[in-house]
Image 1 (cartoon, rainbow, N blue to C red):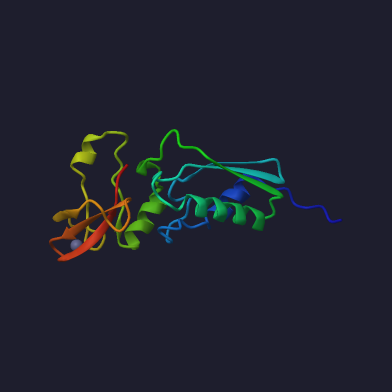
Image 2 (image 1 turned 135 degrees about the vertical axis):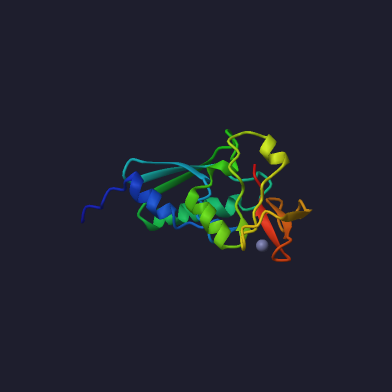
Length: 164
Ligand SMILES: [Zn+2]
């Protein structure tokens, strides 16, 4: 038998960067800050994740995608743990993730650092023209995770990933 290369945590993080968010397929679960921790003894893998919104139905899909990717890179066993505390916050979205959301036409949430005041008066910029001359259309976008805005400069609607 040829000795198998032992898995390292950095290899696994690289692989996880290829696992896309099932709801927003341009960003990975790592970009979104959903993957919290990866541990391995070289063969067996444990991934800890925190879903963005407990109401989002993608949890089971995400667990499956993570497990499949870990098997693909050679994990013998995969355990995906879901941790709900501390709760996911949109501050965990990486800079790269924010840039990708914007390129996708979805205004990234502002970084609020736990300060709830900014959430009452969110500074939302249009992902197309960066204008802040925008109006809230309704707070329930195509999913609970998004709000719909109208850009008064582009005269077009866009969605924002809600800060949380
Ligand atoms: Zn605009």
